Image 1 (cartoon, rainbow, N blue to C red):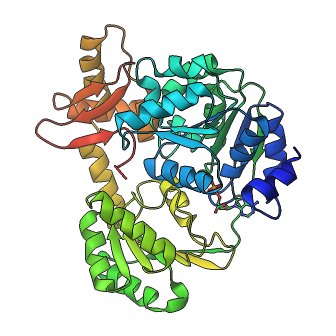
Image 2: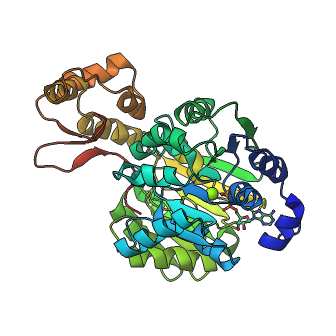
Length: 419
Ligand code: ADP
Ligand code: MG
């Protein structure tokens, strides 16, 4: 069937958006694809439509339960046969999903990347090969990305046994280093590259130096104007998020990983449907959020990295209408990041020592150094300072998964703050 006909009949969209048709064509023809487009541009369709065009089952790897549920629910609503396997479902549901996959009755199977670590699971998938493999939020595979997930690393190892299906890797992260890493890690063969659309002319970017005590009031004034809402405010801590949210009152709420899942879901839904107009969030908010009319993004403190800042301001103005982003900062913010870096990131040498006791030929993973964005010398220096304090845990491949300080909280963790 013609791709455009599928677009109308299955998805009910009148036309392709920019670049979608070319991507769908390449994937349908069986080519590996790397697709980089901004969030909200419509990447999902670029694997979903080829999946239907090719027939068989598409295997979709997705890093967050919320994203998986959202996509699965949208596809089911279109009358497609969809199953998910993730930790939030019962064993019986997972077993049923596997049976349906093996029977070939599914059009889409969504799984979390860590599933690939479950003994026997990749082998089960290989028994009945998928017709297409989609890796959503593919930048999670790269330590250069802003959301590195060690579990994505195992994908490269297992995907070859699921071939010859084309692999389509999707992300909104643009840096060339991340792109190259994705292609290499997933072993994409001569991929069709679609890298598009990062100029955001409708975003007005403001950076204002301001002492901390004045910032809440400033934000409150800004957001009191209805033309500046809906808005997302990024706060540096749970406490400051709570504080500002209660100061803003009625149509504002806090969002952070310390809240119950049910509360967080409610905040997301209410923000999405307009019952809430301002969310004051820590970093846990926003990934995969599909809200086009965010008029303002405010940072009431300096974000920890440029990548995070870029992602977060990118959530403003996806509808193309003029939007403001306002970053409030002072020298003290910078000092604070320096302080936490020094305090929290233990030491390469110490880690290597612990690690080599476990595995004789262990080497300090570059991954970790890259994650910390340090050159080797600085990293080693930091190492010396914190020697004797660190303890590390490792995943089954010998990669560092978490580093903790005795009697204290985990300093560096793989994956996301639980969403
Ligand atoms: P991304 O993954 O790039 O962030 P999504 O795939 O979630 O974006 O799509 C964003 C929104 O755009 C969704 O609501 C989707 O239904 C819609 N969309 C995608 N393609 C089209 C299209 N061709 N016409 C109209 N709406 C579309
Ligand atoms: Mg997406």
